[in-house]
Image 1: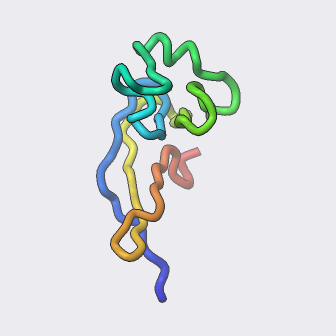
Image 2: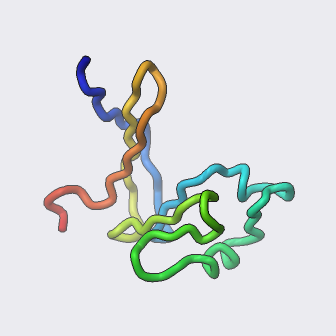
Length: 97
């Protein structure tokens, strides 16, 4: 069986220098268990330092620094048996350091 290839499915535009990865049902809407009322509340919860944090609690989601800051970043997936198995966002490509 051959190794699945990465497929570009779109891109994300970043204006905050970070990417949020998490299930929106935990943070959006009045019934969300970890609801964030506004951008300021979210920013206040971020942790400085390593470029990654779980500002709203373990398991809710993670904030990841984009390395360069604002920009447009490609989103790729690998599929297995027709289902998304992995997601990849390259913020700094090899040789861009």
